Image (cartoon, rainbow, N blue to C red; front, side, top):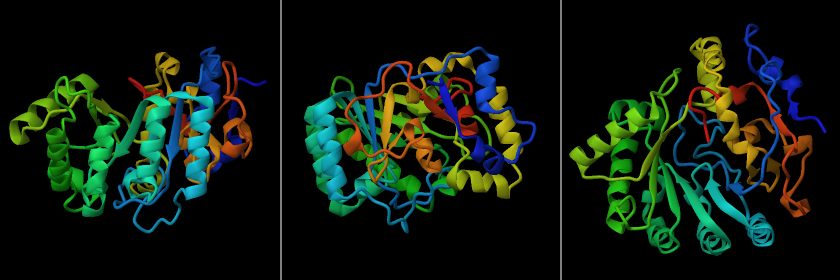
Length: 329
């Protein structure tokens, strides 16, 4: 079995950067045997419906998207989690709170895993019809990973839309009242900050320190951890890079920051990602390109055993994002 599968037919069409070294060639030149380790995480993308149309979104999620995980596929996911048992289950989107079956997913998956994560943009969950979801998440000790790209209101709303910043701050305050992000509460609230342009994030410890100080001082908000990730050149962000003439510079910047040390912990080595239709991928980014796990379109109902150590991982040039600087785990 080959160590990795490269989407070579896609590379020449997606990134018009002739001077960019193919990611698979970079791995070979470094003598890296890039294969799967133990699979411990199930990531579930419940749909592309979102109340925002963020400029950095790799999936083009937004209010007009109709792709959403239906009740049958939700049941298939729950059945898979009960049969194979994962240490971590990670629910993402779109805005996962907007899936009509989100409460079923949370209540049914929580007992089946050690760690259940919900990724939130902090604005979808603020709607009145989802008021019970806050308590459900807290009761099941779901870890919330919340996107907050910037502490500058203008920058944040340039990326995420009007009034998104104020709503995000209000949601963080409500989560704090429930105990999220509070010391010794057992309710973990983590933030994610992405750059608002075609550049790489600042060092994570510096950004975390600044966010912790400013959120506490200005709004009395506390949180557990903050993670900084580079934007992935796919979907809406790729279009923006092309339209602004930033694509070549951004891709070369990612490649120049390639760090082999990140490869031990990149998520594709320990995770399987399930799309809203129930198909299997190595990661959520490969979903954007329809790069199926092991190169074959396979539904979770067909999955009898987890991929094991040494199995292949499908790669392309967007993989430079996860391996630049401190990485993307």
